[in-house]
Length: 460
Image 1: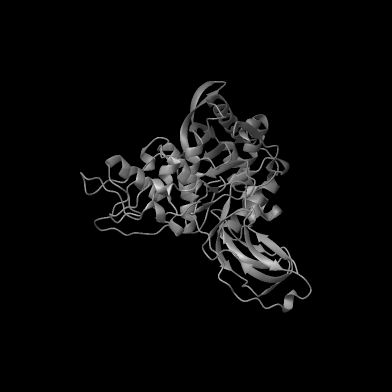
Image 2: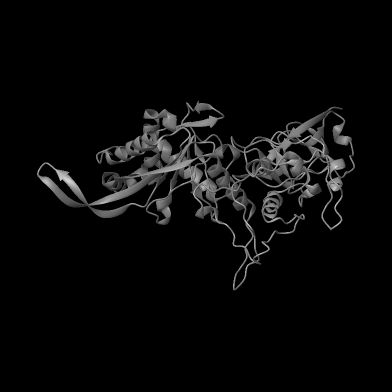
């Protein structure tokens, strides 16, 4: 009876790994084709993985809370007519763990053996080189930090790791570099403190232009005073890593403009009741904004692309992601696929359906895949404008601010006049590797012009 491998599915274009939350089946259990075998989670969505065949679950290769690369074999199913009668004892499978990360690079194995003969054992309590396993696993983040800090491979191999099976974590490599600068050896799990001061202030990425996890060595200190410590949940940790990765990958530039959306506001106020009665769904500002963005992407297709090495991948489909707040305060970006093929009613239905699914934690993996451009409405929370971070591997993200009434100078045939208008700021962050200021500003201005030219006499 043949064994069929069950592999970790790809959950999105930039998602290269997932965390196992729970096994729904155990070794020896019968499984049907398309029956859920386990629950997994990424930084975007939680989902169930179905079996690709019918049979008996022979073995599981990873355990709960393991982080597994996409494409890895996670279980094996024995197929055949007699499989249902096979009793398989539960065995303890080998477990491979690594630090959670949303870095899109694949896992890297360094196969060069450790030169233990050239490194004498330590006798002062530090781990010796001979205790460090050969063929160690190094995450892409650790390798990037080592490269940026000038830590050669033979030196990296001799760093004692505090991770599972002695693996070097991000914390290990950063503290090793910090200790190297002050001339103090590093012991796994021991924080490095400057010999001149007992407390070193933590370095904030937000205070450093273009700062990233690979360019900053943060020293964690024990909090003092009247404080409360809250552990980040899994999604917040992964979102944090994803945002730092984006800032490290793309040189961000943000352009700003404003739009007079008075006609659009008056039209929506006048039509929203009839729209809901006729179409069975509400008309919010979001589909109106997306409609304008789609029209402008057609004029400036280079905004709708990604970068792979030195190649520019222009996306022919226009799939608009819309940043949506979850009840727990985290954000998720469901995607409206082929938004250019939908009219205003279709956009409104898609926006409302995806927003409701996000709030109820019912998004499917395909609902968050394949985005080519993202819009975020920071005005929902009262912000006038924002500087959003690009959702990799896209090259631009547009933010719309709160709509406010302001006195504005109007040009009329009879001369200038001051009127009360509904004004809104727009900002767009873009990847300066491919989007220059001219293209970024032109696209943003075109979106503002589309909104300003909205016809107050438009029919549904």
